[in-house]
Length: 162
Image (tube, helix red, strand yellow):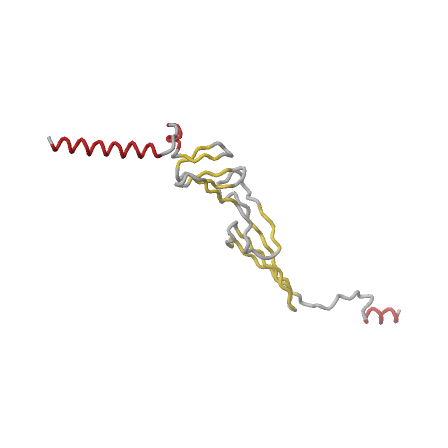
């Protein structure tokens, strides 16, 4: 008898704890509880499961649903580490997934010396990683200006003989 009374008391205490714990939470409708496993992208209206990733193609932006039910967005930024005279090169194909939809950046630098000019063209991705490099060197063989044959000493001498 004592055992069943003790069991009843334990059951009542457990029920009180469970009921009290539920009462301590704010009221939420059943649809809210069901949708807690989703993130909602307000720009596209798309629902994402936790960990799911998609690309907003028109913006070239990757969107991911985090475990905290917040969205993480990655977009194409101009790298801050690139040097030189830079221009953006858009991708040749359309509707690519992130990060292949991001533009590349082609940067030219010039170095001049007595021997000539060195032009270096570097191509970077949106993270600032070097993708391609090309060197062009213009070598100056004769820096003296080219004379017109009529203005040369030989031309003047010939004119005097005629």
